[in-house]
Image (cartoon, rainbow, N blue to C red; front, side, top):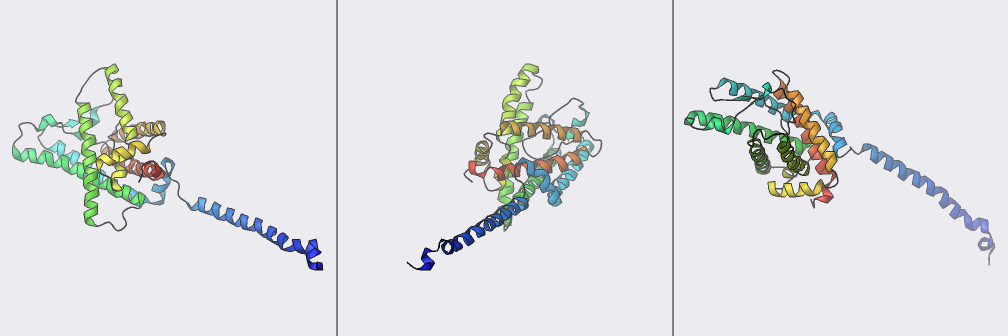
Length: 285
């Protein structure tokens, strides 16, 4: 056996050299990991406000929608068709429709459309259709930009996403009107009705985001129900907070509709997108 083979010191030199290099490699990997964690934007509910700060353009669609809804409030007050002024109600409320929107100062009941002449009927229906269409467009644009899922979309794809979003809004509005038509049912019955309503709000919280990413209304509701398992109480707190914030902003004279739509609508849309982005594994998407 040669001296080189029998010399333990010489045999261990490469090993010692390798060992000394290993911590450096580990430190570099840890450094890269730390850098990646720092550069990665936060996801989920906590990431909504930072995303709005990084990208203020997310506020633009619902700001425009708020101005349109405020104009529609003025037009409803101006025309002779009976209109309910919601701002006159001073009771505490939770204004949450199930999708990103604001709190209009006026509302038109279905009963006000009965026996109207055709020009007045077309005018009233046209105003309501315009309001829903603008809110659907703002929600589609905001959620798509948040998820960065609009790259390469054609006009046809935008139209499909918008129509699907519009269908979801109509579904939520139909349920809301059905519940609202019950009228004054007393405290006990009202609480009984509120429990399944808020449970639906929680389970279908990110449904608008699933619609924007390609699901139909029915599929979006199913995927949303799966994605919200395990975070129900956190989403319930969000629903209440968003509803109270919308109600408070809606009380501001003259600009309440625009403010509630621009601020609450934008933040809610980004939050829905963040929840959808945080839990894709639960949806099969």
